Image (cartoon, one colour):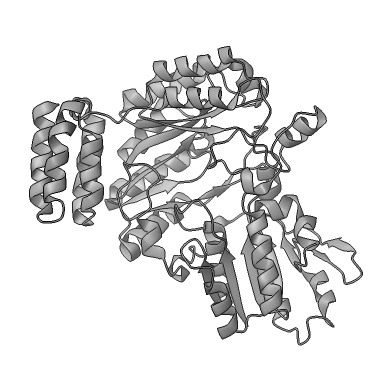
Length: 508
């Protein structure tokens, strides 16, 4: 039996879609044929070509809320080209709103964590001779939602959460045809290439209104994680197999105090085995300690991304963040003391947010001085506490899935701030590109900058290198550098780089 997994075209090109990569790895480990079609990098005609060449018994499509309509369009094409295949949809939106897809002809919804579910599904489908006549076999699979030919929606018993994450195979990176291309996509300018991300834990006990209970429904409230040994093996494999130089831990609670022993064991493994790979991750503002951050730093961590959201306590409480503004200030002060770069994540556009609240966020950014700021406009995703509250309070908000992506810089919720005001506040907290003078006088920044330049030369990314040098130059240097860069970039790139760097040093 052969299975095909499809990741729809998306605005975000960063990284390998780990959900599909994990499912594909499990299907392959179970002995079935499997292929991945990553439509972020493929022309629209690729799907038709693929389905006309091969006969698949199971075709799975990923869907978040932002790409739900795109997923439906793909599902329709699959139904036309390969009606005998069992059409499966998984992902956050499928878990939260299964009938949205079932009413459009999708056969099966994967609910939440699905590595074991997809293998059970393959085992059942593999025995099916006639899809229409044997549809009832779906009753035997845990963790799915499906619709009988009569129209009755059936929710099967849940699939137990996977307690031993070490038991899962490594994600099937090798099944992505455009893997090298995805490794060249940066999350921030500091990333060394090849660059990728990993997810080593599941579950979240917190109640933030803009993302819960989505995470509860997907992975539960209890934090489960791979062992430090298994994560060490994963990163060693990525380094040996794909020459990865930097990894982003996508875990929401990587620096959580419950990870303390894990982090200490991880640090010991890295130092003992001299794992030369740089990494960074996310943290809450009140869940880590200086000792943990120091251990992380000594094990190759160079940056921490903190979910600040706002400088107004009123807004933090509205989001039910369960943190204080003082916690944010303390976290950034500790990171600087340890020598870690920082990223502050900020959200504008809460329905109760006033200009005074937004200004408090501006003042917070000035005080904590992050090295970078990621700012978005608040979005109400279906199934979240925020979504339900806005509906209850009769607050107008965007419900068109094509327009709710955080990557789209438009106001999505009726609020006290206008869209222009939100954009002005966003602009005011964006950190300027650091000048070479700023870089050279800060040890942690100097090391990061030097490694990035070296990495771009090794990867022969000369255009990106020239752009980086221009970005970090002061205004007088830029004026002198531009003609030099234009003159040499096509003919003698290394001479151009030398002249650019000398210009920067001279005018820093």
